[in-house]
Amino acid sequence: MPTAPRGARPEEPAPAGDAPRSVDPLAYSWLVALGLMAIGAIAGMLFLHYRDPPSTSSAVSLGALAGVLVLVAAIERVLEPLVHLQLLGADPASAATPAEAETLWSVRVARCLGLAAGLAMLACGFFGFGVVHAFGDSATPRYVDVIVTGLGIGAVTKPWHDLIRGIERWAHRPR
Image (cartoon, rainbow, N blue to C red):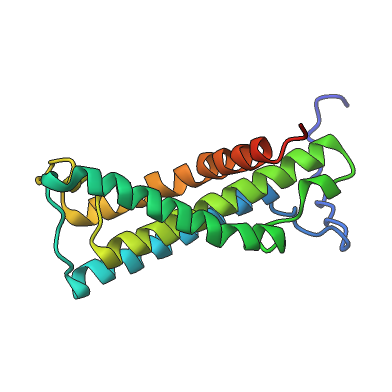
């Protein structure tokens, strides 16, 4: 009978050897980066709250630019040995395929950005440095200024590194 109800079939259990899917390494690296940024932001805000450094004024905006450049250079120099020792991800040159090289490069970029921004927020909170206040906006809370400045400094470390590397290559070019 084609219209007769069919009996319920028992569900087949999943094979015992199936493990849960692994986590995407790129997504995991961005979560690690966000975690590093959050730790840096919290530590920077705690430094700002308990240390209570003097705030910057708009009269020292050239000093703010100098402070940004010093922090960028210092953080870039901290990241350099960590990258060389492959503590922030494997070297993309060691990959077997171009797709794997792209993934390794993206993982390293995410981790470097997270660590750079976290360190920058920590330093900004410790020194009471904020670019938003330095350029005249006194209505923004200093805590927000620490986060904004830290993210900006963390994002500038890669272009700064590329600039330094280009200057080194130019200075040591064959003549």
